[in-house]
Length: 184
Ligand code: HEM
Image 1 (tube, rainbow, N blue to C red):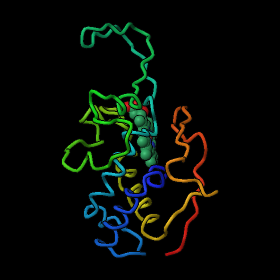
Image 2: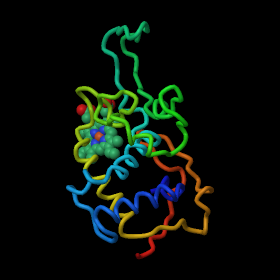
Image 3: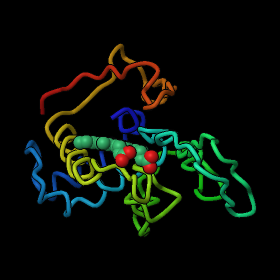
Image 4: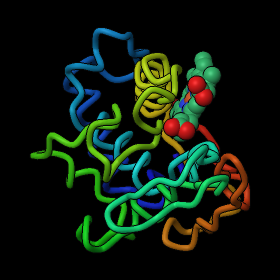
């Protein structure tokens, strides 16, 4: 929601898609999500730029491991910095821009096979909540977009919205988003 309120053209594009596909003012159900590609691109773009578990879950190495010419010694703690991967300019064009369109023509997915985008981790300890999360997030977000207009509290201009992040096991906005719903 913060990125959408900071980038009103993206919000409007999402509203337009929803109006065309399911009709303004309606809540979304699971079957609608497949018909809402732009909404799905917004969710992916959010996973890229604000991964909710920015270093995955810390892992400990049980024995020396050779990985691409590097040795990771036994007992090291390993953090995978997916936050930095999502902002790596050798992988993403204009990595700091919120541009859902980058996923239009792309097969990159969040299910743990495309290592440039692994917000749920990958492999045998991949997040078991992934199937639930990727169903629920577009439903919740799309319903908020389709049933209200939104404005920032305190008359803040979209470009001035503070997007600073607070790091922990999960990633949060440093300043909570204050947004006012306006009935359609
Ligand atoms: C946006 C939503 C979510 C994100 C981005 C997310 C992300 C993650 C990540 C990155 C990991 C660590 C994977 C690794 O280290 O390789 C993880 C683990 C886990 N997640 Fe999620 N998660 C989400 C939602 C959920 C939900 C909805 C549930 C439960 C209903 C859940 C349950 C778990 C559990 C139990 C683990 C530990 C798995 C293990 O270590 O075997 N997550 N999640």
